[in-house]
Image 1 (cartoon, rainbow, N blue to C red):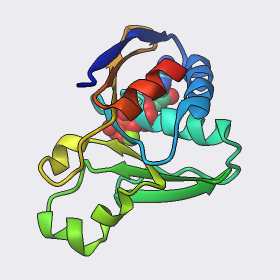
Image 2 (tube, rainbow, N blue to C red; image 1 turned 135 degrees about the vertical axis):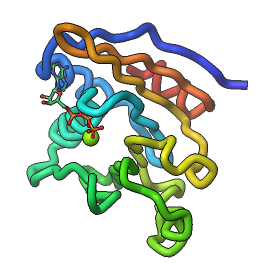
Image 3 (cartoon, rainbow, N blue to C red; image 1 turned 180 degrees about the horizontal axis):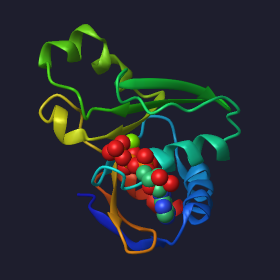
Length: 154
Ligand SMILES: Nc1ncnc2c1ncn2[C@@H]1O[C@H](COP(=O)(O)OP(=O)(O)OP(=O)(O)O)[C@@H](O)[C@H]1O
Ligand SMILES: [Mg+2]
């Protein structure tokens, strides 16, 4: 059984999100499935952008709101950034090849995972964003050994 928490992290501003993203960049490993939870505007995409920047990605990082997934290959890592807010059609899961993206090589970061409940593989890790009066707070939870290792490496 692996089920562990990290103490919550307060991110008073976007610079703090960038600093946390740098820590996360060192801790992530191929095969991880990371759910990003939290309301609209809670800062999920901001973290993914900061993570890619921390890994040295130079291109534009679009929110995958309409495409549902954007792919990035950087520093030997294969990041897959999903935003399932608009995901409706369960058939699309197979047809679009989403299932195949969850393999041992890819690191999948998934916004709005609840929209594909039952289809989406279980998370190794979840980051839940809360909006504070100033900034954001994230609650980190690991569900697997791989997720626990990532949290311990932060
Ligand atoms: N740590 C932070 N402190 C203050 N503002 C932040 C922080 N992180 C992100 N923001 C701001 O929150 C806003 C929304 O962020 P973002 O688009 O990342 O949200 P999201 O969770 O991806 O939303 P959605 O569910 O709509 O995709 C942005 O304007 C961003 O500048
Ligand atoms: Mg987003």
